[in-house]
Amino acid sequence: MDEKIARLQQLIKDANSVVFFGGAGVSTESGVPDFRSKDGLYNVRDVRFDGYRPEYLLSHTCLAREPEVFFEFYRQKMDTRKVEPNAAHRFLAELERKGKLAAVVTQNIDGLHQRAGSKTVYEIHGTTARNYCQRCGKPYPADFIFECAEPVPHCDCGGIVRCDVTLYEEALPDDAVRGAVSAIANADLLIIGGTSLTVYPAASYVRYFRGDHLVIINKEHLPYPLDPVNDLEINAPIGRVFSQIDLNEI
Image (tube, helix red, strand yellow):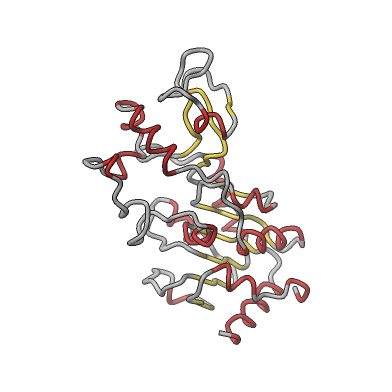
């Protein structure tokens, strides 16, 4: 492991433009559950939602047809306002301050990268940190849905206030996708961390990488389609890995 950490540190030091592409495994070390592991959101039973598929509970259809059910699930499972960034978030923010990291591309919706200090973050699945009225577009703060006394939150105009999260059946946000693809295409070092690359179309964006070096950090080895061109794979928690990098030597 020490040899791999040293190799990663050298790759970062030599790079001019680093991009980090991350998934749920980045935030699990902060206590945010992932979706698909055995202890993930989709696999832990909650009797309040028996009879519902998890994908349905986070879908556009559920929001439209059963908004009371949608918002009850959202309030119970998606509130990360008290969660703190971990070592991985803080490392990436510092790497950006040093001028090494060009962007974070994240599949997470918890806003922890920004709370750690990252500025250029492409949230390709949206975020729970923003809300807006479906009818008039008026923006609302992150607390609004969680603290609203009504089962279904409404705007002054009467429209439903929803989260700025990309739900199942919805298209990914154009601006975030364009920014993510451009950043990946222009990076000379791409670090993929905490993701199985099984959620599409987001996972397909790494195919735009044409840089010099590719690093994968994940707790377990997974059959990445990019394996033949990996420079380095580290199977360990990403926060632990980044904690061993000496930023003073980069």
